[in-house]
Length: 117
Image (cartoon, rainbow, N blue to C red):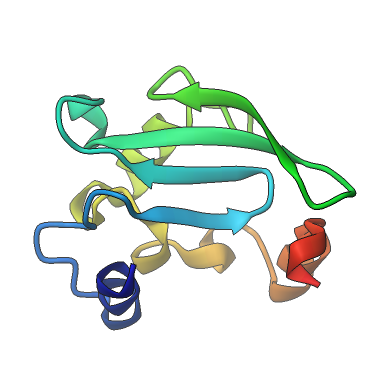
């Protein structure tokens, strides 16, 4: 994970994130780099919607590729590819939270996961 952190911090992805990378901004959705033959259209990313529970556990509600929808009820993959296809589908370098209409206060308010307190 150190390699993925360095790539994110520097904004220099090279060939992209390494297999095994998990990226999560909100407690209710994440993306994981699977690689291999998984989702070649989506760069090997698996999209996951989650349900954080009050006890700190998390349920996986949906997981997969283009069929997984997130907070906006649109395909996670379609949006990530549209916004950041040249950045291994990671929007942070292109859009950032502000580009999604999110302020730091709103992001903090959405952080309902007890592990983020």
